[in-house]
Length: 492
Image (tube, rainbow, N blue to C red):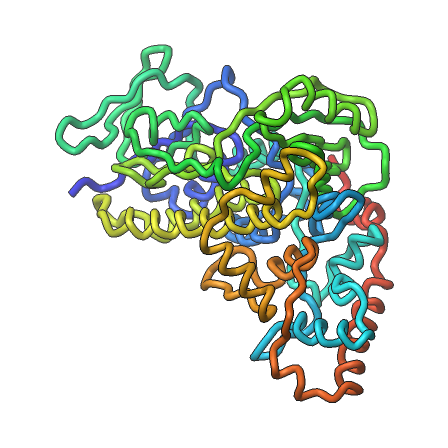
């Protein structure tokens, strides 16, 4: 039995410093933690939109929300507005927060479906405070909100913020490039890493946060990769920052174009812009021109091209190496799940951290959990593409006819027939998220849950009207997003 005495993290960025901060804060007094990072290697640095699960990470590390937001130029996020996805000139919002009031038998949308058939229900977003507030550019934190919001933040400043936490808990940063790894000839485990200056660093557990290169998990341990390009057609992105001109919106924009989509993420001091596309349908030069032609405000930096491969490592934990971040796999940025996946892997590692030697049961549990997480998120992302009604370009025609996972096909058919989702335990995107995207993409259920018919038409109308009224009254008290930020977390 080889007890874990030293953990070595390879790579910085959000994934590396999130791992270092969490391990240092929660387990740092039990072993030595070293993070190897090279200033010669840049980070992807465009994961600037988050989802509400980040609140869990902040609580674990006792991070003060106002301090974090002020130091990362952050704004609030109530959801994502999807434009031109179903058809040209069509849009819908996938918001956070509760939709109406659920019952033990079914979600509020079943009551809404019957009310809509009867002619006295309006857009489902009017029954969700976060949805209505997003459309009105409002924001507040109130007692009923239950953390139904996330953040837009500067990824580089976020990594620096976490580095400060990590170093306060005795995490040691080492500057250098890893040029070689020495493996144990009997076990195949990693024993030492050699840096470009000749320094050798030994360890017992290695965390690979080296990004797409998979420096340890793939190049050294040859773990294998499952490619999902047949489900997710986009394989490139170009990103650029611009000056902030418009009023700060409390949501991300995801605007479909002829060969993919582009994002718009408002920060307090600037706007993050990017264009995700398929290289089979759009050249790099065309992508840059399309992005710059649609940006508002003066550009701050030069456009940066990013090439990626969608899919997952066959094992996220192999031998004595755990892949966290882009080294473990990548889906795509559409629903802002990047930082969530970093966080999910870190928490799962903490829950299964070796008590003595590294045991296969801990690895197997970790790998099963992360594979399920990746596949469930993959299906939700594919849903946005395969249900399009657009036929105006070869890209969207391909999306309509491409292969999709059987698990997703089952969910679409179930929702179309009965309005049910069939959510699995511990799944990231819950029924509310699936319902909003399904409806937004034009999938209308043929039936609603029979429990709805227990209400008379008058009772049903009173019920949905009362929900709408409560949401409207609640949001009416909220200030503008800009006003709330200036009072709560102005950038430092």
